[in-house]
Amino acid sequence: MSATKDPFAPLRSRVFLAIWIAAMASNVGTWTQSVGEKWLMGEITRSPLLMSLIETGATLPMLLLSMPGGAIADIVDRRRLLLVTQSWMLLVAAAMAVLSALHLVTPTVLIAMSLLLGVGAALNAPAWQASVPDLVPRDQIAAGVALNSAGYNASRAVGPALGGLLVGWLGPTWAFALNAVSFVGVLVVIKGWKRKPVTTDLPAERFIAAMKEGLRYTRHRTTLQVILLRSGGFVFFGGTVFALLPTLAIHGLHLSSTAFGLLLGCIGVGAVGATLVLPTLRERLSPNALLAGAISAFALGLLVLAFVVHTIPVGLALLVCGAGWLSVLSTFNTGIQLSVPSWVRARALGVYITVWGGAMAGGAAFWGWVGERWGIHAAFAAAAGGMLLVLAATARLKIQALQEPTDLSPHRLLPHSPASIHPDEGPILTVLEYRIPEDRKAAFQEAMREVRRIRIRDGAVRWSLFQDLAPLEPGLLRFLESFLSSSWGEHLRQHHRATVEDRTIFRKAYVLGAEARPRIRHLIAAWEDRGSILDRILE
Image (cartoon, rainbow, N blue to C red):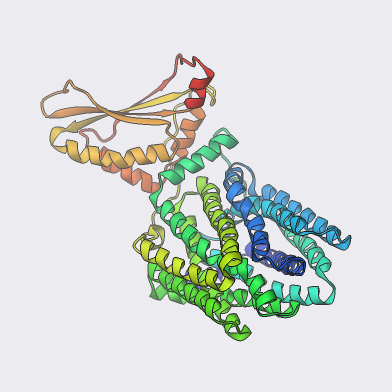
């Protein structure tokens, strides 16, 4: 079996294997704590809304912090960032164990502590996921993403079962303590990871600028927007399972802590099973067909939860939901990884996790409210119907990177001639002069639409295209393309952001000219009117 088709090929990398095992052990601790939290909340209250707010607390930071986390991960050493976030989560879990041991836990404390753990997870996730291409070759990225998801879901199978036993035997305090200890292994492995540093002569990006670039890139990358739209819709309705399952198990099925943990583990078992068959399914089905099948299976599982009140059928439905959840989200995650170049990968993943976290947090609160008002079975049924409607509405939106792979590797341009200006000086106006035969005017203008999209996506503040009213000679027109960069350093970064795919698009415009390449000039602002603070704000 080739490395591309072998789902376990990334495990041959010693670094990937060590990080994968450590992460799986840590996730076991996380799921053990999750059982402790939800069981403790179930003992304190019967409210579906309060129960679901634990899920909201855990995922709300994804909405607020994943994008900043992605920007940070793109401009600092990801290894160091992971060390900080893992240490933070260790301290929060330890504090939770202490509060539980002192009998100081209330619903507010439970929700607040899940929120603090979510802060660490939100800042950790973009850097963690963006590190996959640093650990495996490009043709193993899909397998690496699937293995990460499988490891996460294997821990979801083991962790809840272990949590149920631990809570029933020793109490929730020990579940929280185990989670704190589980972060130690990850810290040891990451500290020993000798990540190859990224060397560059470019000035470092600033945090706010990096955030803006990530948002600008998302706004002008249609293939990325498709994944964000489809994943947001799926997670909003699919998150019903995680928000309402504790209420169903504890107060609907009247399960013990051990049985509750085993029931939660069914989701992880289903996900692990999906990992084993996904490579075969990807060979036989298009990504769109695979997504449609997995989403339909998940909706079927939700319908079973809506109309069946017996433990075994519920467990089987959760197996199906787990398989569908992994299949859909690993497909979306792989699509993100392959849709963006390395310079913006963590920021794109940050946007993706922001959408995921917002849909999960908002969905958990919404479905908890629906369950409180009309009952959890009505909520499951409504979520299934909504998921199928979203599938029908978005079925034609294909994930292009999985069907038509593009080369997003950096295009090595010839360096600029040395400039005796500081990287922070600017703005910089770049002007390109094109000499276009009159019969190619329409084709050139159409080609420049894509050029504009790339310029703005990669950081240009303004872009314009002008035609000289005075013709150069009969049958030959002159066009001036201009775009503004905020500084000389930002202009240099835009050159390094160009990919092989981008240069192909540029060449389509260049070949329409009478000359092989346009004539290029760079101008620096000599004086700029900044008359008021309001002008600066509105700029």
